[in-house]
Picture 1 (cartoon, helix red, strand yellow):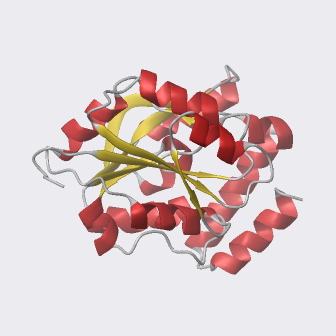
Picture 2: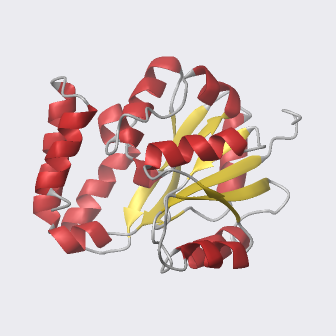
Length: 234
């Protein structure tokens, strides 16, 4: 792939996302330039609904992977042909012309970055939480903000740590801050607040904060996942 003519491979890890994936793929095509997007790779971790068939029918290439978002994203990156990887959650919608923003950023020798974030909710607390995404600090990062990275840097940093069942985005981005000048693009993705609506806004944010604290204090991936299972996914 000619680095003077960069192309983006979009990698979307999914598990039972039939309610979102078709809408997202159509949105991506309507809000980007086809010549910039080499491929949309939907990496399925074992869906038992219509996720795979919907993804195929809307024009994505589907890869079947072991379950686990870190494993799925690494698997997608392994088969991606673009020289820029763009990791996107199935319920996160990037800004219009996101492809141009990414390519323009990478052309300035910025090898990794993300967008600022908004939730699909006007709740004041959620707006407050999302407000911090404009700050370029690793504590303000998360997978819902999406992530773009050059193939070269992804390989150099060995990708996502597959020991992490949760916190995989944060762990990887934390390492990226040590390798490169991480960039926050001043445009917003819009992500679903469905987990907050299900668990409770204050409760979920509190538990996310505890997970960050446990990681800071040295807890490994097993302990983080154990806490997540007991407090969030139970």
